[in-house]
Amino acid sequence: MPTAKKLPSGSWRCQVYDYTDAEGKRHYESFTAESKKDSEFLAAQFSMEKEQRRHMSSSSLHNAIDVYIETSDAILSPTTIQGYRKIQKNAFSDIMELPLKKLTRQSLQDAVNLEAKRPNAKRKDKAPISAKTVHNEYGLITAVLNKYIPSLDCTVRLPQTETHIKDLPLPDEIYAAVKGSEVELAVMLAMWLSFSMSEVRGLTKSKSIRGNYLVVEEVVVDVDNQSIVKRKGKTKTRTRMHRMPAYIQELISRTDPQEDRLVPMTRSQVYFRFTRLIEKAGLKPMTYHDLRHVNASVMALLQVPDKYAQERGGWKTDAVMKKVYTHTFGQERQRVDNMIDEYFEEQIGITEPDIPEGYMAWLRNIGRQDTLELREKYAAFMAEISETCNTKCNTQ
Image (cartoon, rainbow, N blue to C red; front, side, top):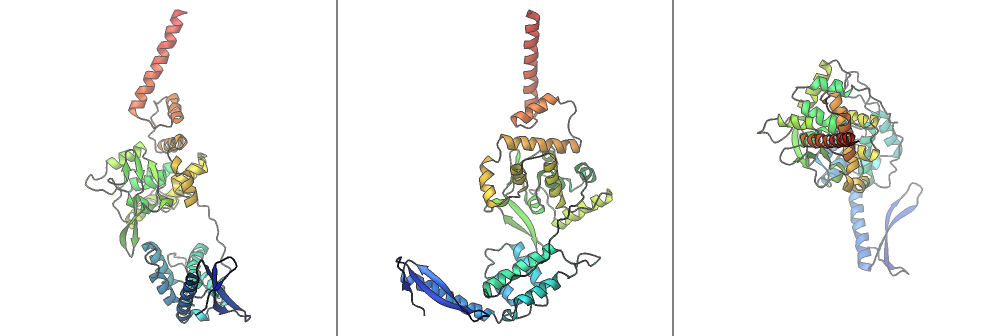
């Protein structure tokens, strides 16, 4: 066992042999700690893990993925594990059964090149899988290889991803296609409030509704054809709270009072019923997820500031989230909500024509949503101004 040596700084350092590269150079790992005992403990721990890696080098890539998943299943989500299993089963078939020690940078590059040509089983024309899919698959491969054979250079050239600008139907066309259907609420939650499929399926009357707001407390995902509820309280990146527009409140009020979930349907039921309605209406093909893109396009059209657009859609990192979360429902955010609500209300034809423009401008200015009480307050205010003007005119 290596012995730690004391450094001039007073710390202790212990060096352990790691591997010899292709040029014959020996590489060492160095462990520094405040005490000799701690430094040697870290070195011993590394040596033990190194032995495990040496043992793993004789295992196939397929088996290495098994071990990788088994040693991380407590921190990986069920959907992530399902995705890993799918990659293990379908991707990189030419190297999946090879021992790790036989893999080289060139063999990895050849495997990537072959994988990029693999036909997409979901497409009738047998077009290759997307570049994004190859990137995601190789991400798992490199994670496994970096853990069990860190000396292997996994740098390869991946296919270039392309940005496709999809031509989607307009909000009023989508609304007309789904109005009165059993998926209308699910569609409006995604298109108007930018909730994802899993978030929409996770919304409940008992946990998600807080006054006039909808909160993402949990999501529902499908794993091996089973619906799994995932708690979202500890994950702040997608924690969202949206004010409920009056129309969506009305749709919720029409749901089964005995059912807690706002949308008690499976992912397949929502998806296929929605796409069939779009096809029946003769609209351009789109997926349910595209509804979030429609929402993003509307915010871009209305020139919603990036801060509020990212916040409403959940497109933010932890750092951005922490930066803006305390200002989530300030006056400016309420004005943004009003602007988006007014747009969708106009698109689906529920804006009342008899509402004075001055009243709507007043609402935008104070960051409030239209209510009967505010209408009466505004009417009384205008009547008072009118009476004051009339009095002054009569005394002149």
